[in-house]
Image (cartoon, rainbow, N blue to C red):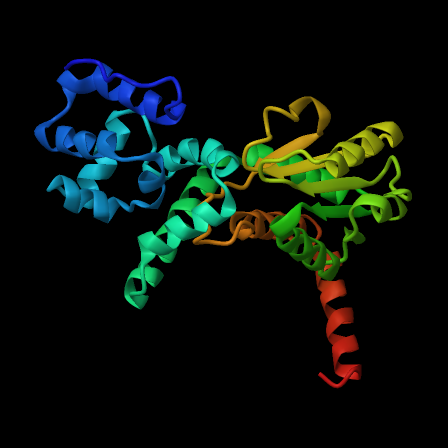
Length: 295
């Protein structure tokens, strides 16, 4: 097969995809080649919204053939390919442009809308479940269990996941503080961070001045840090104690904090398993308080 010709501005994830197809072309079956032709004809934006079912129809094959093709090319599945495509797209395409593309893709059909959203959510969940092994979760749980107080910070929409973790940890008896301010007021909230505390930062793909300041302060006082991210794991590896991956896509179909919430649920359940007596005692106190409040 002739090598694909790519421009200097073409997305490097698509270039990587085409390179893999070129290298493995002679080993691919007829149906796999059909899928490859469809993949290489797609733009970055179109690929981000495509489902395995849609690719199967366009290539005259099936969902299973699409998955097998991607695995033959070295990907775990469609979600991994989308994950590689997503990062540069989210930073280079304006939000209003992405919104217009999303509206054009999904259309007004309610059945299509719900199918697209559930499909993307399923892909994200599958990718997230593969990205974090037991060792990484164990390291994170160990930090939570041994912390005097867990400070939770979420950047932008990831604040939802941060809220979720702080609330659920508090309910099982873990001392937590949710950092809700930014900029000037953030200093007031972080000044009590100590050497026996843990700072959990939810930051998918951007390092802001606030995050820089949080990491610097944690290092200055000797606090542990746990990063929950999509793209920053390698970049911040030398500045955090542990990290977990919470993948997301820039399509806007599913919430940015979706996988961050699920990662939080794993952490909370694991911490409960480590200290079941504390979790049960806290649950009883919480229920007693609710009864006294009339609930």
